Image (cartoon, rainbow, N blue to C red; front, side, top):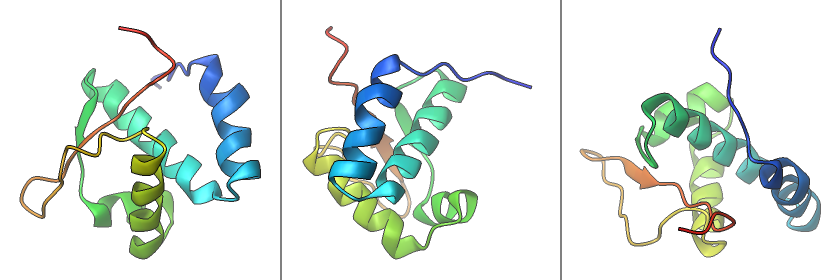
Length: 99
């Protein structure tokens, strides 16, 4: 079984902020799913369809879409990357890590 390392920031700050303050637990679930997919590919860009995310997380497609909108507003997903049906790319941002 593979292990996934999370920055402490994700659990200590981001989880309470998204789940408690924003009252959007689905957003946190989608972000964790995307982080896992990025870790598997060892890249910040993930190509996975909306339907796949919904199926794998147990959320509805509309809930995943709402989570994407919120993650873009919060600058946790790159708003410049536009996913399409044929190219469902999304770039995960980690603003707490300085380049």
